[in-house]
Length: 106
Image (cartoon, rainbow, N blue to C red; front, side):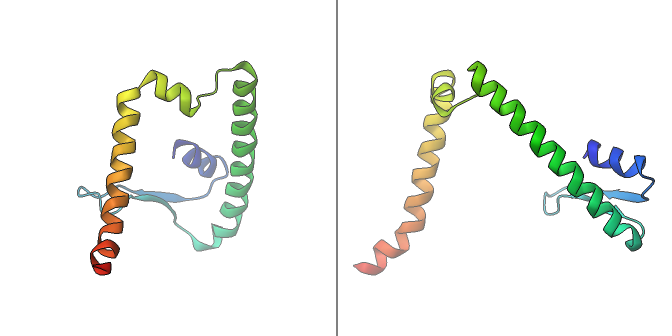
């Protein structure tokens, strides 16, 4: 969000921000004050996202070459309890989704 604000401010595109709701229903956002700036803002965002994607991919590739990129097995070794709880949660969710199908078969 800081990068988006800085991008809009650098190009003098008027904007405002809404905060997330207290109950977590809405996430908030950054909005343009003038709809006429939408196409220019979209072009800027597209260019920004392309640069960010290229930089992130280059950093990930460098980390893979160095052997420092996080993998699933590194996470299992570092935090086995967390991984086990996550996998248990996934299995539980799948069972709950499958339960109506199993009950309707009988």
